[in-house]
Amino acid sequence: MTLLSISKVRRTFGDVTALDGVSLDIREGEFFALLGPSGCGKTTLLRILAGFETLDEGEVTLAGADLTQVPAHRRPINLMFQSYALFPHLSVAGNIAYGLQRERLGKAEIKQRVDEVLERVGLTHAAKRRPQQLSGGQRQRVALARAIVKRPRLLLLDEPLSALDRKVRAEMQLWLKQLQHEVGITFVVVTHDQEEAMSMADRIAVLNQGAVEQVADPVTLYGSPATHFVADFIGANNFFSGTAVAGGLATDAFGVLPARGGTAAPGSPAILAVRPEQVSVSGGALAGTVVDVSFYGGLSRILVATGDKSVIVHQHGAPRVAPGDAVELGWAAEDAVLVRP
Image 1 (cartoon, rainbow, N blue to C red):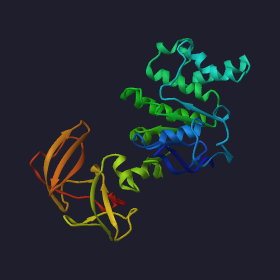
Image 2: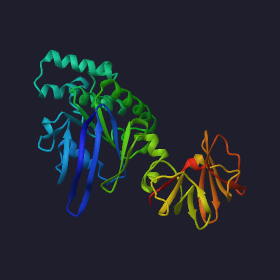
Image 3: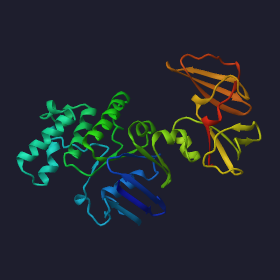
């Protein structure tokens, strides 16, 4: 069931078009990510949903009701800011209770709801501490607790994990996904970190220059990107340019390279995208020479020169080739896809 519907939303700032006809449907109980580089329009869209920004054209509805005329404080939506915006003079429990106190709920109900959410986010022991006495991950949990204690239908998160170090961020990604399932609230998260979006989201909208390039689940985005931009932005890829033909891509330098059909029509200009882990260095049709080998513990990254083209190959475990070795690159047709330029 669709909870949030965004239809042909457009927003400009002077000569800059931040959003150019964006349309999305977000389902009830979904963890949805808005992913894209800086300046692609994802934060502008989040602010429109929260009521902090107006739109020039289009429509936004929540459960069928028009949101555009509803002020921010009356929307059943909470926005968790990137900075967390905790009150330094209040305790953890005080920060979480603040929104409920503003709604003039009874003291007994406020205490019950605060206690429940403290237990849910694992901070019961820290209820009386101040934000400056907490770690970055704990402060993020307080900000989330403050957002979910009001039981919004929709929770918006703006780069929620960007202030955390890599190890804590990885832990928080798993915890945030688990929390979303437990509370049953629809989450919309804005991020420029593809790994973050891929690890947490049920579906992802990839934005570029104010427009939606593709909306899909993480596996589809990775394995079947619709455009060159998506294929380049999501993970590592090797690209070959040419013309889409039956069975693959016709190129001037390498002949016909194997690939399955994608979004490029036969006879049209196309780009073949193949992931480094799908390329083998034996038994293929492209002759090349190993230029560089890097070992990262569980993964070896191999750079191969074939003609004037460099190809990246990923192998599990220790490298089995060395710089200067002659190799033959190849891949199965089903492991490469043709996309629009």
